[in-house]
Length: 100
Image (tube, rainbow, N blue to C red; front, side, top):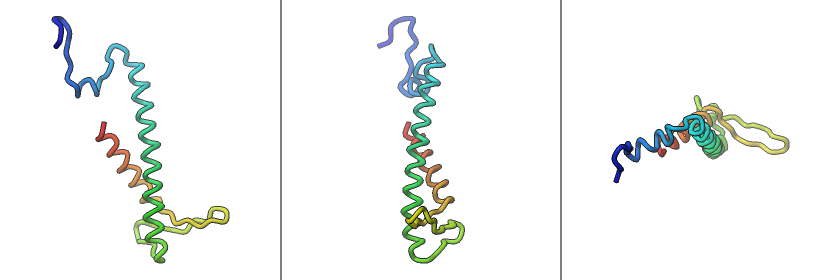
């Protein structure tokens, strides 16, 4: 129950603007959360790209616009696709933003 003279905010507003009294601190915290979301999205995009490129590339196909190609790293060979990586990372980042 809100006391008289205080402004009560809904839960959604509190999530969007957690501390309007100290915006610099809140911006710093939001930036850290956003950076972690980007890192998690890049990892998920890399996993998606490696798995799909392995399945499609091992059949001998480049899958047209997916541009799957064989990459030699030292003694290891890996199928990779930059378009899948970029779109997978973007999709994962968008889903993480929707879950906030």
